[in-house]
Length: 64
Image 1 (spheres, rainbow, N blue to C red):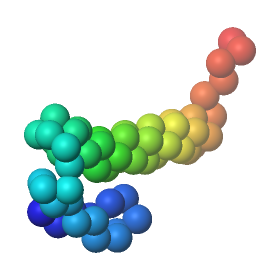
Image 2: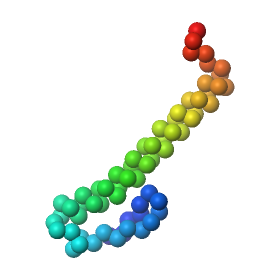
Image 3: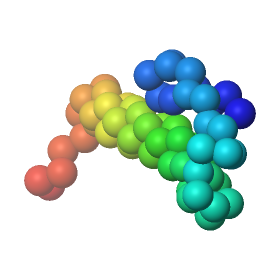
Image 4: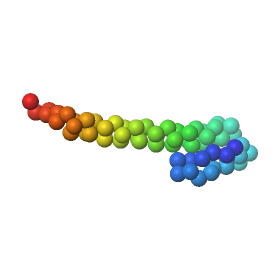
């Protein structure tokens, strides 16, 4: 099977290169989870940035 990693490189995962099915599917899940965690990290960054923008627009003062 061919997969793309987070940086866009193509990774070829051959079932016959692994000792058993568990290690094969574990490798596939590692590739898929790297996408998930990179998206979560990007979403959190965007949320923090948008919160800062909204606070500066509304001149939200947290001290009062």
